[in-house]
Length: 264
Image (cartoon, rainbow, N blue to C red; front, side, top):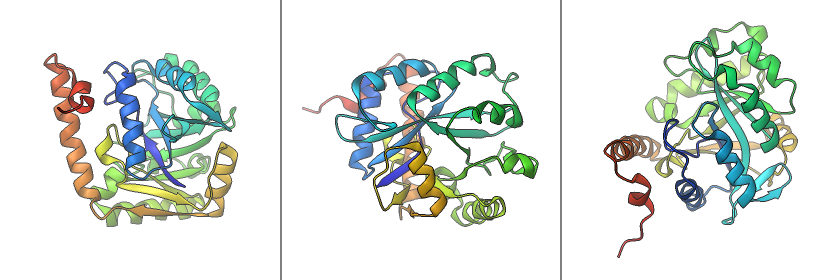
């Protein structure tokens, strides 16, 4: 099973949720060779609940996951900002992720983000997996947190965007911290659109349908991380495409039609 641990279902946080765009994304994920992904949408994205409501209505439930009509398995998740600077990934059932998102409503604006400690106090009340997203990206301060707090994490994200920019440095720092904490390092593309799918992915030997089994396989190390030979090209192209699509929207155009309209 090829899984991407860090993905998004919208082009940008402040843009309206589009069912057409999200459906297109998931179709492209399958075409890129993924069998499953963790939908770690930003906790303060516009219409977070509508995105998950749509998926729960249109997808088939299988264990803890949602399976699209095209056969892509989706683990529900969320990416949450912390007051210290940095992003925390959480993976659970759709119901738990939605409930956590509602409980974080008072803390969705900069200046009101929870500290790492308080966020973990909340997360540990739920049967979810929690990891550090792109822990060494500029602007974040996760590695500077006290070791007793970092020890509460379940995994680290070897992030495709960061690997594409500095593979050696990102791998060295991420694996060093993972070894120090004794937790798995897995991989996510961090994509908001289709081009970045496949720049990095995690291969599991068996198909997994529950969050508990996913964590068990992670702890056993029953997986390998695969990095595309053209990861840098994928990430650079994805960044250009994202900027162009946002500009189309800002000018009053329909960026979704640009992507999904059938050519004559």
